[in-house]
Figure 1: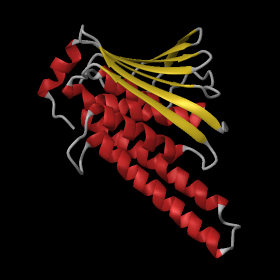
Figure 2: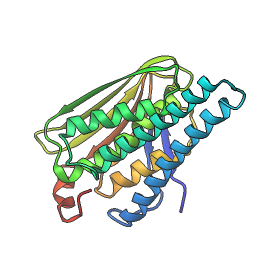
Figure 3: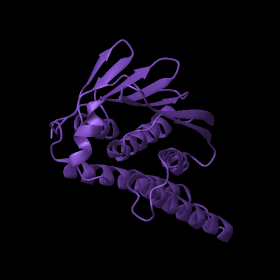
Length: 231
């Protein structure tokens, strides 16, 4: 699969999908996102184990096991918020808030205090809700792992809005240190771009005083997706 390249103009990046044409091979993208998520979780678990190798006290061992259990449970909560497999899906606002907060707690260092501000305006079309949640997972994960790296306190804002014209936008901002200026998009952004492209949407990344990741979906996207299975 070709790498996704980001076209940089000033401090704004447009992410071009690397493989799937519009609506093509969604199941492959599903598997890649699951693998990407699992890899990130395992990396965090391995990091915790590595840092605890020289700790010999029984109390420390118990704390390590408790933290591993916490991260595993958070991973399950994220999967539930994304795909609604274990219970009846809650409202979009609740699912987005649960997803954002769980993702932050999963990827943040134990010393970090990162707050989530989640806002939902308008009614996101039901066929697009799963897609919006999956992209939000990648955006928030990137904000924690990259934007908030080595920052003790910060805020990640998540806003999902659907206008009267039918267009839907997801905007995730963070007040962290920001991404580097590499023209190569990471795996998370490539997944987000391919999900967006499946319904003729776009993904962009803007770096100013804050980092802003944006998903934009056209008014026709919800209707076009009605013929697809809803996660």
